[in-house]
Image 1: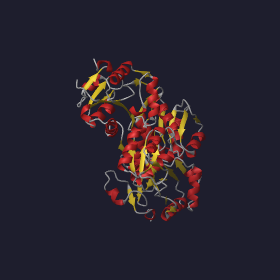
Image 2: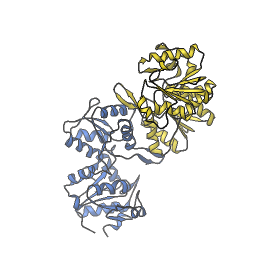
Image 3: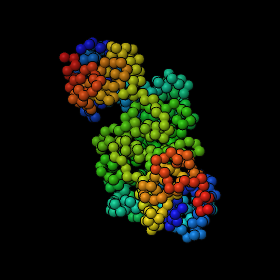
Image 4: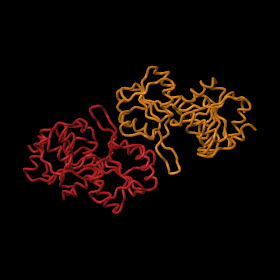
Length: 254
Length: 254
């Protein structure tokens, strides 16, 4: 095992499962802290603010500062700011997104936007989706925080942001730039935040189709942990395998 | 040209274009009336009631009674009533749909439905779509009035009912039974209403992908008229051609 100088770490399925902490993950973080190894949590969740997420981790007994949280919304806001510096944005999303946009000084407008940015919005409605379609047809750049089509809940699968971006895509024929995993933009943004190189950093996550692919896309080594979505057997059948694949994070620093 | 004993006739692109009547179509209807040939207007529009549509035609100077209007919502209500007689329905839709369901005695519920029926709904929102997804996963029958993904307006393309049913399909993995054109259910229903056989009836419309295909599916002869979506040249390149293809309805009874 190589000595990595920085870690990017997924949350759900890696640090916790729903409302239950993964004990080995907590010890893993304690090890990183004790050894002064820098790390960031990277999450496709676009509705929570970094404050919400830090608090959630703290409630699990995991030390986490707001600065250690990187969300797809923050990465999307940074992407807009750097590619379209004066852009006015039409945003479909919750506080995690609108706060992130305001944070970097992007003006949020209801009409004539230069950019349409979509994150999950439990207040989404026909009018917002219609406007998103019209603005994209009028030439606004089309961005999305994350492409998750469906989200598991206790009651069953509910629509994720990906379901709504597909709707706009089907109407307009325009594909959005997706910022979150499995795309590389959020990983690149997290590396920048941490001041680390891709070669010396490892991406840690449970989900092959999001965490591991995003890490690979950005040129990082990857560590798959089987405490969430993807099993070790599934990993064995992949053409492109993660650098490492383990049962729990307990095995890592042994 | 065969003497057809009944006509099924599309509306938009065939009888009128947006807010403008097609004069030849009005004369065509006058000929049917003068000769006592029965006919029905068949429309994928699920939001308008038959009263709304009859009034729209009357405002164009076209005689039309409420009984002559067949909507995808009416056909959907009849389909539910005959296949799931005691069904309680969760309905996403406007008055054209909810009125049609009540008309045949289907109870509309917000929870634990046996059927999920979706039509266009300009008050659609996250909660309705989430509930539709959950009910379909719980085993409710999934039906849709019409599959139109996008609808042209003066401002651009806006989401049609098909965009929202695709969303529920993407989340649940379940395809709905579609009642409207290009499926045959609404055509079958219109034949029943008029008391006519498929062999003696002709379907008239401007749109190959909806009107003509639906007519063919239901075993009718078909008359394509080039006053709307599909051109005569496009028709020439189709493997399955309509029985007749003409520039305007003026040519038909000459």
